[in-house]
Length: 166
Image (cartoon, rainbow, N blue to C red; front, side, top):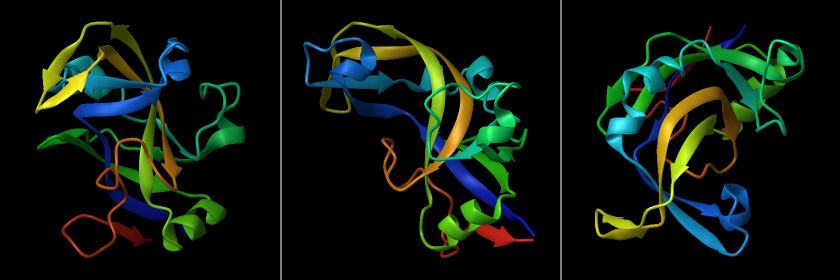
């Protein structure tokens, strides 16, 4: 069998990165804004369709050359906006990854590329140091704890979105 899940895979708002992750080792933490006009841009949303699902993030981009090594499933092409989230059905076909999800590993983290615009500002009462532009998905990782928070996850069956074994 395999697992089909309706999942939130990304969100708008401010997310924190280590300075070294974004090319600024001089800063311990960088607040990065993911504005809705970038997250919900047609090209950004389309880039999340038919992407590999991985169990944790690989140390390299997932490509045709290494897909078999990393992929445990795939996102569908039904990429939708749900308030501040991107919501996409996904399928997990790997038994070990399904067992991890069943044991509670349900948060998700998008692996993507983007352009960072280094400009300071304020969003929803919080300071940011940079803005993500031109977001393009590479994969969606099942993780214990994702940067986007616990609402970006595979549902737990207690609400109207969740996971179901097939």
